Image 1 (cartoon, rainbow, N blue to C red):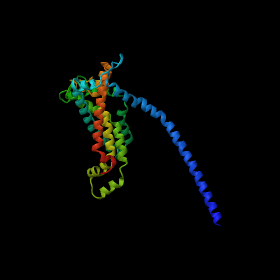
Image 2 (cartoon, helix red, strand yellow):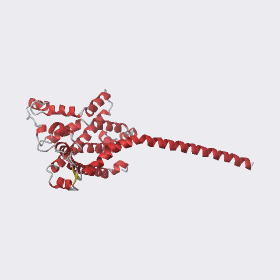
Image 3 (tube, rainbow, N blue to C red):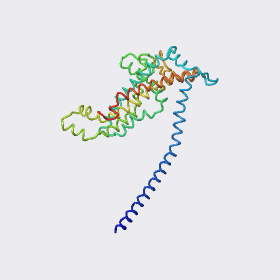
Length: 315
């Protein structure tokens, strides 16, 4: 009997070993196939993102106009940027001011619209599409449309102001008004943030809301103590993506202002474009890009550092 029992146990162990070998072989094949499928994506990211980024860092130490031979100048480009460049202070101020106002306005506007669209209202799907469409429109079309709205003599906004007996505004031609005017466009085109906020609001547990209502919390209290903590990671994600996007702003300067008036919309990305493609100083523009890269990294690191509790859900 003992012999038969040991024989059966041996057969069972052999079957288990075969299953392990079969499963491990299948796992290795899946792993090999996954790596093969990742090769095109890896090559694409390397050639499109990592390669050019590394090339910019290398090129920042050279003086090159794109045609003649590159001349190694060390950190001379960076010294010129911080000591002699006439655009650095204005471009940094304009970029940071625009980014902060655009992020603040976009987050408040998008969250407010998302809350309204999350309510049980008629034609809710149509309204969601209406608010998302501006994000899908071609940038040049959006800016040209707003250029007509902002036009000093025949624009729609100034026409309304005149009808109301108010003083017309210069909007894009006023150093004091150009940044707020461009921020309005950025806020209007933040439909992607609305969609993300809406998804977050729909995932807020209803049991928390019901418990708060039983405890006598009003709508504002439920929003502040239930909704906001539940969507805090969504808020962080939207702030992060909006901040990085708006720090890299260039389209408004290209389409509407050309850096003016009085260099108030001379954003850092536009300065890089100007040095690289208008003045053919590719090495200097690369050094500017490195400086800009560090600035964006500082803002991103600061945001991650101040909101790390919200990211990992420790609060």
